[in-house]
Length: 59
Image (cartoon, rainbow, N blue to C red):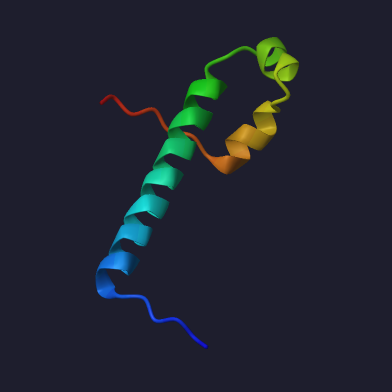
C-alpha cells in the first residue's frame, strides 16, 4: 500500500532538509577555524571537512 503525502508535508520536509544542510555547512565552517591538532584530537580531518563544504553565517 503506497502512502500519499500532502503538499504541506512535502513543504515541511523540504524546509527541514534545507535547514539541516545549512546547519551542517555552518558547523563545518566553525570547525575549520580550529587548528589541525584540535581537529585531530576530536576525530576530524581538515581535508574531509573542506570536502563537505563550510560557511560562516552571521545571524
